[in-house]
Length: 92
Image (cartoon, rainbow, N blue to C red; front, side, top):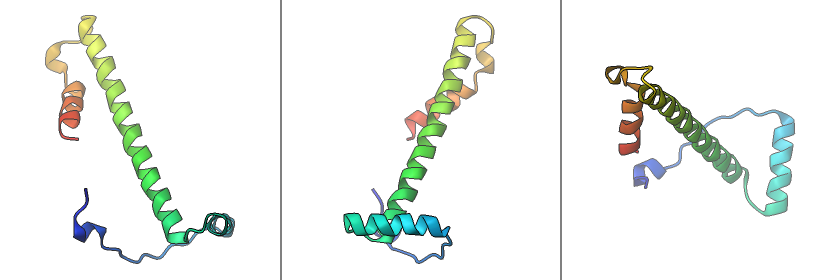
C-alpha cells in the first residue's frame, strides 16, 4: 500500500512520437479513459514486468548455483547468489 504522500500527483513533461499519441487518443475515444490513465497504467505495467524479470533472472541464477553445489562443482562457502535470492524473497 502507498502512503498519502506517495499518491500525491506531480506533473511531468513528456515527449512521445506522434503515432503513439494517435494510438493513445484512439484508445481514449474507444474506451472513454484519459491519456493520463493510459500512460500511468502503461508505466506501472512496465515497471512490474521489469521487477518480475529481475526476480526470475535472480531465481534462475540461484537455482543454477544450488545445482552446482549439489553436484559438488561448487563449495558451499562460495554461495552468494542464493543467499541474496533468499534475502530478496524474505524481504519482498
